Image 1: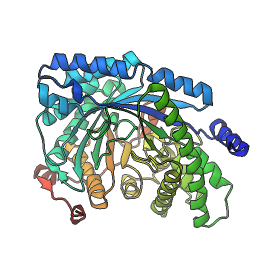
Image 2: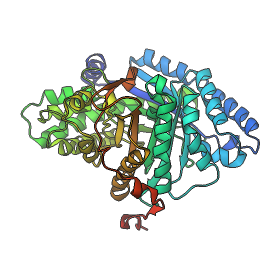
Image 3: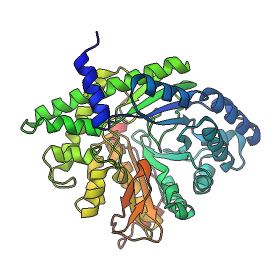
Image 4: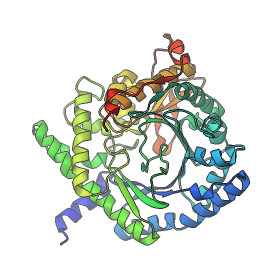
Length: 452
């Protein structure tokens, strides 16, 4: 039976608190498109994506009109392209270009999956694809790339970590005229999930169905508003308020996923119940932390507050949907969160504090703008630090940093839209990690990996 009070509350959350469905993402397996001829493989890819996703955007817009629920992005994720390159050989950038063409044909915002899984070493196609990422992203508009360089089971592939430092720096250089946007479309993972609907890290894992719909929700503004009505509750009450709000947000995501699945005739996969912020005022994870009683995000106590938030979101979400997956928790992308932007500008939020926060949140160092003269080895060392947190704690961690070519700490890089603007954050560029990165090899898997 429908509860009128709950319906009205959800409408208010949408109208006044920036509640939305951040994305519906169609995952499409491209394994059937593998071919020894790369041109033939590209033709198969274009045909399959445009056939499967032909009505994705139209369906999303129809759901928005019917239910009054904003769906901000419609996206596609595909099988890691390195797997197709292993069969075909040739120029990997041809795959990036056909993905971009297909994404434009069906009208989606982004397409993810120009990816490789190299946590234990390079297979055929992997290294060639990774080295092609800067060229691929500078020659496309909607393609996103990710590389998984570590896992709790495999350890950390430090040869891949070393390579990714150069890839990120080269991507920024090749897209300098676009505010280094190429680097903003690369995510380096440890323990990457196969069903993540959020860009830039989305790809369609080999264990997924041929085609599936995954939904990513948002709602930091709704959580903050709920906490504002509980100014004197203790932290147990705070956790309960967050759980109840996360439940309502996730139910909305479940509804959208079920309806989209039925209309498109493909299975419903998961709801990723991550709190995904935006630069809009009132839609910030940092402001939730401040609502709990931390004066400025980044002050002492921030990590504990974030841990409470992340756990309560997950507990509320899993009660609302039987199929929760992806990343699920709280995102802390600096340039995409109004409160994080302010805290970074004031100096209250440092890269070191963000690294500590990543130990208890959904992902990792996300959308952080760094000085343009940062050496590739330092970028690799940042990736290694984050991967170590993920590996040891059996959680997903990731790095998405943007070297601001030609600019220094204290300046800003303006992206626009959901990407926001990024204060360029100070690093310890006067201290080198180059010798450590040059050693290469693998950091062995921790004892936690021996669970069988």
